[in-house]
Image (cartoon, rainbow, N blue to C red):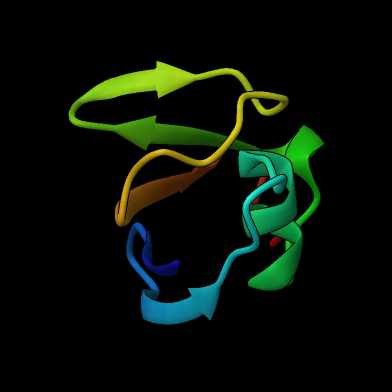
Length: 66
């Protein structure tokens, strides 16, 4: 499945996801650690270990250096 990942404030990327991959795998595919973001699907946070079921996700960075 092809998933569009919107990193809030940084743009969108498309990634290919296998049948057994989780939202943590999607986060890693766009270059982040699951520990520094929240994944949001349809306005609701989802667990990082949940299998990917949506073609569009939002990633909200919780930690940003400066």
